[in-house]
Length: 256
Image 1 (spheres, rainbow, N blue to C red):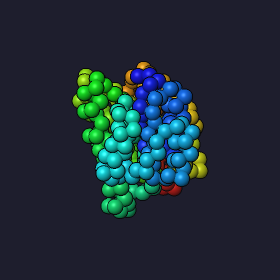
Image 2 (cartoon, rainbow, N blue to C red):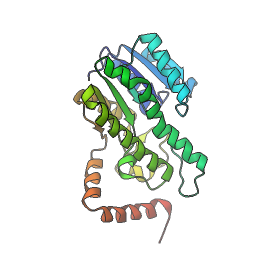
Image 3 (cartoon, rainbow, N blue to C red):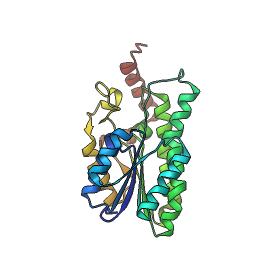
C-alpha cells in the first residue's frame, strides 16, 4: 500500500516510533492523520506539524479506542490505515503484580483487538485497508528483563498473525513491527538485552515501516538479524534456551 491519499490513525504518536511514523506518513502524502496519545502536551505539536487531529486516548480502555475511531471517521469519513503502536515496558518476573500483568495485557494485546474490532470489518467492506501492530523482537524471541513485556508481546504477534490469516484474502493487509532497541523514551542505558545489536533511530524504523507497507510483507524487521535468531530458535530450541539463559545471567546479574 502507498500512503499517498490515505487516512491513517496512529496511537502512541506523541513520541518515539509513533511520532516518527506520523512525520513520515505526512511526507508520503497521507490525506489525513489522526494521532492519539495520553500525553497531549507532546501530541499537540506533532499534530500541528502534520496538520492532523490530536486525540487524547488511553488504549487500555476499549471506550477510548471506540471514541478515537469515531472522531477519525467524523473528520475524514474513513480509516485506511490503523497503526496500533502504543506500548509500555516495566522490568519484572514472578514478582510482578496481577495489576501489572493486566495493564500489559490490555495495552499490548487487547488494544489491538479492540482497534481491529472497530475498524477491520469497515475496511474490508470498502475493499481493503492496512492494520499495523507494533510488537517487538521480544514477541518473536522473548526478553530477559521482563516477563510481562515478553509474554504480552508474543500475544501481539499472535493476534497480528491471526488477523492476516482471517482477513488477508478479504483485502486487509497486516504487518507486525518487531524491532530490537530503538532510541525512544523507553530506551534506557545501553538498551539492555535488546541493545545487543545496537539501537536504531525512530526515523529509521519509520522508513522501514513505509517500505514494508509498500511491499505488503507481514514482518517489519528493522534489525534483520532477528530473522537469523528466529531460525536458530526453531532449528534447536534447547540450544536457543541455553543461549537465552546466558543472556539472562549477563543482564540480571545471575551468576548461577
